[in-house]
Image 1: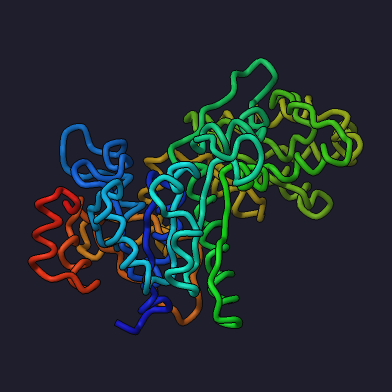
Image 2: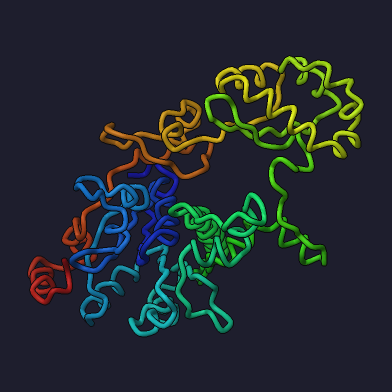
Length: 398
């Protein structure tokens, strides 16, 4: 196939869990041939974490491993490493998030692979980076991206609120986009120089980037206090409110001079525009607590559907606090191609978060079973049927 941007690009996904494999998933969306290396038997441990306890779909796996081909290969066996080396010799990208000591032990570090293929892009992903005392430390997005970087603390509703746990993959998927960007940057350099090389990213670095505004403030010596309770928000017009049906929305009315009077008129409280407590921006800041109380009473009187129409009618920027059940049927998300159907047409999946004009993405194919394409991939690499049978007999190939 040659009708996609990355058609002909060969990517070896020798990673597990989410962030590393998801970077390869993005490449697959644009046509790359992604070969998923996983151990025979149970395969990537992410499969088990995402399995439906009643059987059927392994939901998370379908998202992270769509479009890929699975080669079940025991890398602890010399013959398994030899097979991997053969694949790497004509690959374009190798993605791994194995801990650094594991890479050395298995002989899949850059020093082992780059001599086999000088054009190879070796994409390395770690929890805490590849230097310093914690380079070999393991981590997940909940520990390295969310907790360590201050995000977990920063989003607390108030000082007394316990830190909030992250959702599955919440840091992994943005981090995967960062790793994808590194890979594509390296591919661009390869176009100019002919040389591959190592690119790297980490959960820690991506978490710091996500919390960059607060971190940069602190780096300039300023303190970053926890946010006050919403009732004491410093700006009542950039706050979240609850409607009569229990649904919440967050408002971001920053163009106050132009929009404030029409906003008060639309919600039926036109007199607030001339109330001395709220008539000027300094007054509104000084009396934010009182304005929050006024708006709390207003919005609690009607359902979210009503306020959505009202706020839209006067051009106020706001966002409904969505629930997962809402998102799956959101027509806007489908209109922009953020939710797209699998090629079998039976259900939707979440697309990678960007598009290129004139470049169609692959119609997403279901994620593979463990070793589903082992024979196919090995035959393409030059293995005979007898050789493949021998590797199966040794337990090297699943």
